[in-house]
Image 1 (cartoon, helix red, strand yellow):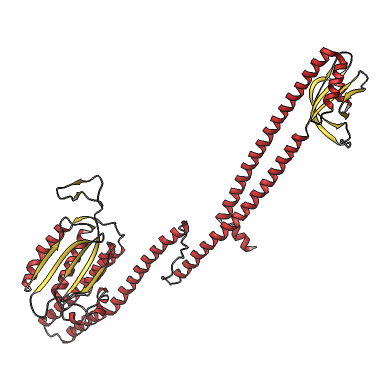
Image 2 (cartoon, helix red, strand yellow):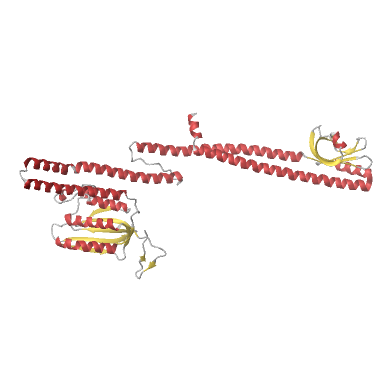
Length: 481
C-alpha cells in the first residue's frame, strides 16, 4: 500500500491520469459525434425514401384507383427489403401489405406525420419479433388509409456497433494508459532512485561516485552527464582544498615553528636594542615569506574557482611574447645565457592575458633557477605554434631536467625537489601554472629533452568571425570573446 501511494504521488502517475482523461474525453467526443451525425444522416435517408414511396403510390392511386394501388403494394411487399406497406379500409381491415401487427393509434391518426413505431412484420420469417420502423400514414378518398414506412433494423444495428466500439475504445484507452503509466513510472522511478542513491552516497562522503548513463541520449542521460561534470569539478575543488589544508599543515609548520623559536630566543637572549632589531628583522623576513605563500595559495584558489571561459579574450601572442622577452632578456643575459623566441606569425589565442603572462614569467624564472647546464651557456627558448587545433606555448631550457618519476609530482603544491632546496621559493609557482592551464581547458606538461626540460601549455585558438575583415596576411581582424 505504501509503495502504491508512493507511485500515485509521482509526476508520471499524474501525467498518465491527465493523458488518459484527455484521450478518453476526446475519443468519446469523436465517437459520439460520428454516431449522432451518422444516425441523423440515416434518418434523413429513411425520410426521403418514405416520402418517395408515398409520392409514387399516390400517383398510382390517382391514375388507377384502389385496385391498381393494391396490386402495386402487393408486388412491392413481396420484396425482402426494408420498405413497409399497409392499406386498410374504412373499418380498419387490412387489404394488402407486409405488416402483421401495428398499434391501432398509428392508423387512426392518419395525419401524414412521421412516427417511430414498433411493429411485427408479415411473413414466414417474422417469428413474431417486434421491430422498429419510421412510418407515415395518409387517409385516401373512400376512407382508405395508406401506411408507408422503413424498417430501422440496419440503423439500429449500426448504432449498436458504434456504441460497442465506443465502449471498447474507452476500455482500450484506459488499459493502454495504465500500461503506459506502469512502464513510464517504473522507468522514471528507477532512474530517479538511481540518482537518489548515488546522491546519498556522495553526500555520505564518497565524491568519486558518478551517475549511471544508459547511452540512450535521453533527458536523464543528458542530466547525468551534466551532473557528472559538475561532480568532477566539485571533487577536484574538494581535493584541492584538502591538499591545500594538508600542505599548509605540513609545510607551514616549520616556518611558523622557526618564527616562534626566534621570538622566544630574542626575548630570552637579546641584551640590547641591536639584538631585538636583528630578531625583529629576521621575523619580518619570515612573515613576508609566509604572506607570499598565502597570497600564492589565494591566487591559485581564485583561478581554480573561476568559471572557464568567463575571463577569456582574443590575445595577440606575438605581442605578448615580445613584451615578456623584452623584460627577461636582460635578466637571462646577466645569468650568462640567452633567450630565444620562436613564435608563428599572426598567432592569436582565446585566453586571459594577465594569467598567461604570469605563466610565462613563472616558467622562465623556473628555467633561470634550475635550468643551468653543468657546462656551457644557458639557453632558454620561448616558442608558440598551432598544433592539432590548439595553440601551444613552450618554455625550454638546456639544463639537467627532472627525474622521470617527478615530472607529474612537481606540479603539486609545496613540492620542491632536492636539487632546488637551496634556492628561495615557495613551491607554488608550477601549481599556479597548472591552475591557469586548467582554466583554459588545457594541461601543463613537462618533458625531458636531451639536454634540458620543456614545459608546455595549450590554449584555444581564436574562432574566426564570418563577418570579420581580413588584413593583407589573411588574419581575421576583431575579437571573438
